[in-house]
Length: 139
Image (cartoon, rainbow, N blue to C red):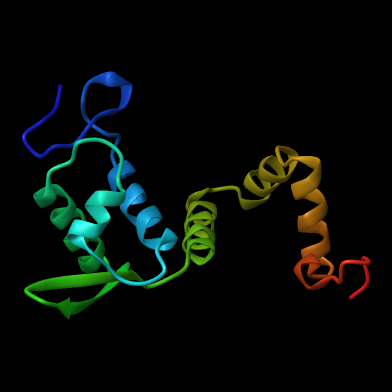
Protein backbone atom coordinates (compact mmCIF):
# COMPACT_ATOMS: atom_id res chain seq x y z
CA UNK A 1 0.00 0.00 0.00
CA UNK A 2 1.40 3.42 -0.94
CA UNK A 3 0.63 6.75 0.61
CA UNK A 4 -0.20 9.81 -1.50
CA UNK A 5 3.41 10.96 -1.32
CA UNK A 6 4.63 7.80 -3.01
CA UNK A 7 6.69 6.67 -0.04
CA UNK A 8 7.05 3.00 0.81
CA UNK A 9 7.18 1.82 4.39
CA UNK A 10 9.17 -0.60 6.44
CA UNK A 11 7.54 -3.87 7.33
CA UNK A 12 5.66 -4.12 4.05
CA UNK A 13 3.08 -1.48 4.97
CA UNK A 14 3.96 0.65 1.93
CA UNK A 15 5.84 3.36 3.81
CA UNK A 16 9.59 3.69 4.20
CA UNK A 17 11.18 3.93 7.63
CA UNK A 18 11.87 7.48 8.79
CA UNK A 19 15.06 8.74 7.17
CA UNK A 20 15.35 5.81 4.76
CA UNK A 21 14.36 7.84 1.72
CA UNK A 22 16.80 10.61 2.66
CA UNK A 23 19.53 7.97 2.95
CA UNK A 24 18.59 6.53 -0.45
CA UNK A 25 18.71 9.98 -2.05
CA UNK A 26 22.11 10.72 -0.50
CA UNK A 27 23.42 7.33 -1.66
CA UNK A 28 22.32 8.11 -5.23
CA UNK A 29 24.08 11.48 -5.10
CA UNK A 30 27.28 9.99 -3.64
CA UNK A 31 27.35 7.34 -6.37
CA UNK A 32 27.02 9.95 -9.12
CA UNK A 33 29.96 11.46 -11.01
CA UNK A 34 28.57 14.96 -10.53
CA UNK A 35 25.49 16.97 -9.64
CA UNK A 36 22.07 15.40 -10.31
CA UNK A 37 18.68 16.91 -11.00
CA UNK A 38 15.60 15.65 -9.19
CA UNK A 39 14.62 13.64 -12.29
CA UNK A 40 18.07 12.00 -12.41
CA UNK A 41 17.87 11.14 -8.70
CA UNK A 42 14.39 9.66 -9.21
CA UNK A 43 15.71 7.43 -12.01
CA UNK A 44 18.38 6.04 -9.64
CA UNK A 45 16.02 5.20 -6.77
CA UNK A 46 14.29 1.83 -6.31
CA UNK A 47 10.54 1.60 -6.14
CA UNK A 48 7.77 3.67 -7.61
CA UNK A 49 8.30 7.12 -6.12
CA UNK A 50 6.59 10.30 -7.18
CA UNK A 51 8.75 13.04 -8.69
CA UNK A 52 7.33 15.50 -6.13
CA UNK A 53 8.44 13.19 -3.29
CA UNK A 54 12.03 13.31 -4.55
CA UNK A 55 11.81 17.10 -4.89
CA UNK A 56 10.59 17.33 -1.29
CA UNK A 57 13.43 15.15 0.01
CA UNK A 58 16.03 17.13 -1.96
CA UNK A 59 14.59 20.38 -0.58
CA UNK A 60 14.68 19.04 2.99
CA UNK A 61 18.29 17.89 2.60
CA UNK A 62 19.20 21.28 1.13
CA UNK A 63 17.45 23.09 4.00
CA UNK A 64 19.41 20.93 6.48
CA UNK A 65 22.66 22.06 4.84
CA UNK A 66 23.47 18.59 3.52
CA UNK A 67 23.28 19.53 -0.17
CA UNK A 68 24.31 22.42 -2.37
CA UNK A 69 22.29 23.22 -5.43
CA UNK A 70 22.98 25.07 -8.64
CA UNK A 71 20.47 26.30 -11.18
CA UNK A 72 20.13 23.94 -14.12
CA UNK A 73 17.45 24.90 -16.62
CA UNK A 74 14.20 25.56 -14.77
CA UNK A 75 15.28 23.48 -11.76
CA UNK A 76 18.35 22.64 -9.75
CA UNK A 77 21.16 20.11 -9.77
CA UNK A 78 22.20 18.85 -6.32
CA UNK A 79 25.54 17.78 -4.83
CA UNK A 80 26.23 16.52 -1.29
CA UNK A 81 28.18 18.91 0.94
CA UNK A 82 30.23 16.03 2.42
CA UNK A 83 31.36 12.72 1.01
CA UNK A 84 29.83 9.54 2.39
CA UNK A 85 32.71 8.78 4.77
CA UNK A 86 32.58 12.27 6.30
CA UNK A 87 28.80 12.09 6.65
CA UNK A 88 28.96 8.69 8.36
CA UNK A 89 31.78 9.80 10.67
CA UNK A 90 29.73 12.85 11.67
CA UNK A 91 26.73 10.62 12.46
CA UNK A 92 28.91 8.29 14.53
CA UNK A 93 30.38 11.21 16.49
CA UNK A 94 26.91 12.64 17.07
CA UNK A 95 25.65 9.31 18.43
CA UNK A 96 28.69 9.01 20.68
CA UNK A 97 28.07 12.48 22.09
CA UNK A 98 24.44 11.59 22.85
CA UNK A 99 25.42 8.69 25.12
CA UNK A 100 25.81 9.29 28.83
CA UNK A 101 28.76 6.88 29.17
CA UNK A 102 31.29 7.40 26.37
CA UNK A 103 33.62 4.72 27.67
CA UNK A 104 30.86 2.11 27.70
CA UNK A 105 29.71 3.08 24.21
CA UNK A 106 33.24 2.95 22.78
CA UNK A 107 33.96 -0.32 24.59
CA UNK A 108 30.83 -1.92 23.17
CA UNK A 109 31.54 -0.54 19.70
CA UNK A 110 35.09 -1.92 19.63
CA UNK A 111 34.03 -5.27 21.09
CA UNK A 112 31.57 -5.74 18.23
CA UNK A 113 34.03 -4.94 15.42
CA UNK A 114 35.14 -7.66 13.05
CA UNK A 115 38.78 -8.75 13.42
CA UNK A 116 39.61 -6.91 10.19
CA UNK A 117 37.96 -3.66 11.34
CA UNK A 118 39.62 -3.94 14.75
CA UNK A 119 43.02 -4.29 13.05
CA UNK A 120 42.28 -1.31 10.82
CA UNK A 121 41.22 0.81 13.79
CA UNK A 122 44.39 -0.16 15.67
CA UNK A 123 46.52 0.83 12.66
CA UNK A 124 44.74 4.16 12.33
CA UNK A 125 45.11 4.93 16.04
CA UNK A 126 48.83 4.13 15.89
CA UNK A 127 49.26 6.67 13.10
CA UNK A 128 49.70 4.07 10.37
CA UNK A 129 47.32 4.60 7.44
CA UNK A 130 47.01 1.28 5.55
CA UNK A 131 45.58 3.09 2.51
CA UNK A 132 49.05 4.46 1.80
CA UNK A 133 50.82 1.09 1.84
CA UNK A 134 52.59 -0.13 -1.25
CA UNK A 135 51.59 -3.43 -2.77
CA UNK A 136 54.59 -5.12 -1.11
CA UNK A 137 53.26 -4.11 2.33
CA UNK A 138 55.76 -1.28 2.87
CA UNK A 139 54.94 2.42 2.96
